[in-house]
Image (cartoon, rainbow, N blue to C red):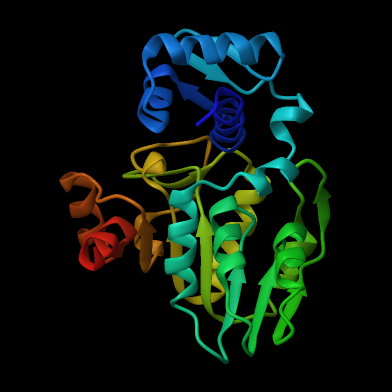
Length: 259
């Protein structure tokens, strides 16, 4: 991976997770700590991040970080695999809710063109799905979050009251013993209602989200039915899922089976 590609991926990670550490950069991109630090210096010089002790955080109001639009073009291979596995759980006639996360966006991109009803509060998910002739798309109304392209607020939640669906696909910034968490409360409130309206709740979370606790908790582990991730979690987290009767699907395991 070229440095500019890596820098974009780092910005995307901070945009979604609000912060990144030098150790996380080393693990995610298989680079040395010196390389990770040089990357952060370069991004700071571009005013794309704010460096902290041991890592970096979002500068908050910088549109280069917050803009969801360029995140649409840089979904990681891990998220794509999770998206493919999630899409495989759907069948003709299903009704489904898709939230605003980039991992759920990967699922939207993998959906087959079949008779199905999709409800979303993401203008980006709706755009991706609009090219599929047999899908019926319901875009929830509400106040538009301009930077991230999702609709939220009381009118969004009130509209969700009218729908009862087979499955809801939900993304997170963190999932841990403290439940499902995210950085934006307004997004979390909508996610919570989406989960209530679904018969089965499926959480999509790559390995970097496991063990992370973010600002706003919108659900507990017992509120979900299935979790799809890209790597086998550590034993203590698997035990937590088992206690809460959460089915675990791991794309890494499936690759091993077919290799």
